[in-house]
Length: 292
Image 1 (cartoon, rainbow, N blue to C red):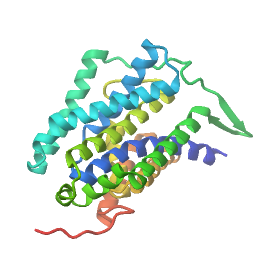
Image 2: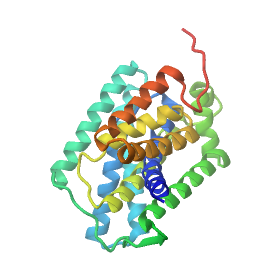
Image 3: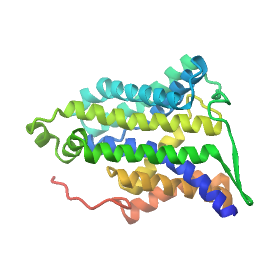
């Protein structure tokens, strides 16, 4: 039963990593950018939800939607202000800008909201322990898993069943050819940032409720681990980000329980090193050739 308990814990954490990793992989798939500010978008979404829940007394679903909307707007603004002017610049310029934007977001939120950890209202999503024999499951963990699955299903529908999704896939394959076919690539890139950021914002609310604490620096380590998850699954591949996030969550949980909590982060990043050595394209990635 303890093993099943840890599986539930790992899945709830893994789906959070997956929601963040999907944003990384979507942006990389279209413009080839590793958006290292994405972990802080997750933090910004958590604070949007916190503001809505504490100042307006909104219930869980409206709080979640406001957090997703706020994070989506923040993502689009960052893309327009920081990344769009540098789109044709060397990749290193975009990378440095992303790191700078990450630090900027952390300090802006710290200045506005304070550096002390804050908690969501207890009545936003009351805790109930569901027991199956000796197995105890927090209802909030189940809700995190279910909401994450619903969001991923909606994303897959958008990507594969809508004109916007078709345009996103076309832009990821060849932006110049997509533009020649009448696709507004700039708008598609903005939509991609919005969707990825909205998913990260949802993850921020779910984590804020589950762990009862948010702070301006909460996005640093989950952002890095979600990046590892995206690379693990195959950067640029949405199902790969989902699989990588779940594997990362399970690996971190099992390492904390069966090895040592002191080494869980080291183990997580060791996984990245091993994958890059053994299969650089990731678990679901394919080898590609590049003209030079």
